[in-house]
Image (cartoon, rainbow, N blue to C red):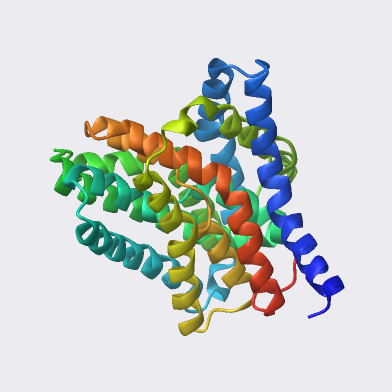
Length: 322
């Protein structure tokens, strides 16, 4: 491959990862100079979770023609990759001899990516509105799956006592899942989507998603990086490299190609979701380890996504970009 072709591939991949992680890095810088405080991060995150992202996901879900999804192999590939990554990382933790409690934190981090913010932002940067539409169904199914698996893993390794009933009720109250569920219902019932919804969705994609990415950057505490241990680096490698590789392998074996493969890769290649820290702390686990894994994967994800997506573009596997 000529140098000019290599450069073009890198630029193409950066056009996907750059806008997303550029905002995150700007958030880190603004927090460093004191222009973003923790209270700002908390407010932005809460508004995003409770109102803005549910509206965006509703709009995307409502415009999908689910009759045209066929067998949705890309969705099955994402689900299979999640379960396979969990099982493989659990075997790895046992082989490495990690303490049971820390192994639970490690395993949750290995499969639980930040679908709703970073994953969605990457899909939108790569494919525009079609990328959001493709990502909606896996986001709904995999978010629910992540929660079920997290409860099972943390109960097994940390002795948490959250009941199945409490877990189900928590998912039914999840604003992201509510937004997606309502959107799916509107599409399946053939109800008209209010004319204002697409305009609001477009405005959210253009203006509020960057704000949420700034908040992610603003939540990163750089002064903790010197305390990162080997286990943190290994967990980051599983989240950013091994997990997406498993997803790609399964997707290719199942015949997934084009934009669907690109969407699954971008969703699975996102850093660890912040919800993993909340669940570990609630189960009285190693919150420091969980937080450090989130920080490290968020900082490194721009590099791993760029390299991985460059390879996929060079092989012609991820379809036409926006």
